[in-house]
Image 1 (cartoon, rainbow, N blue to C red):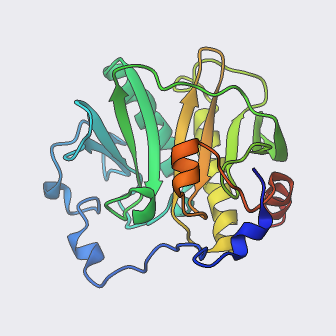
Image 2 (image 1 turned 90 degrees about the vertical axis):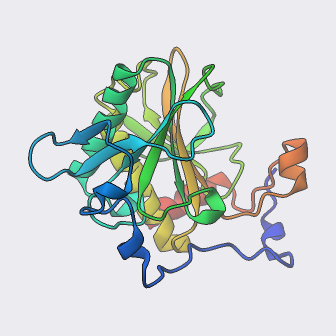
Length: 252
């Protein structure tokens, strides 16, 4: 449901990521030099020299097997701040850990406490689910732009403002084995940077959605507070029409 006027209702102020506290970097377990603060790594890339991406077990996993992919040795707070070579290694880490530990791997990203992140240092999670995550059909969408055989689009049935999907122009089955996964992560970082210019550094979620025939990265910004209508009835009230979101993202 598209309802732009709902953005003006009392209490509709959009949450922003809180600023860093003075001891954030000193206590961050994901920064270089703090490797002793995490469980032993399951993968480090590159394998020689200073690491750029590390994979470690998740200490607070909701499932039997879950790992954290640290996106940079630098203390960056968003995937938008990751460098291109770091994102290439993130894609490689997802691929290699999925190959090393077969099963229903679900890659996801949370940024900001309101989006479920407990640590601010940019990272993604790999969760081995007991069953495959149910895929959605490829949605009708308003194209933002195309690049490297990938399309960035805002679904016509967007659930939240600036919901965005990034995937191959032509359906492709094997996401984690695809040469397009790293370029898709780079496009995700690009879209998040554009979102930051438009709305500030807002909380967000992203995940890799897969089906036997297709895949896409989904960006789900937390610009709205999800209330009983959304959570109980599954009816999402979006205050920014997808064609307007696409226009704004192109211009940002």
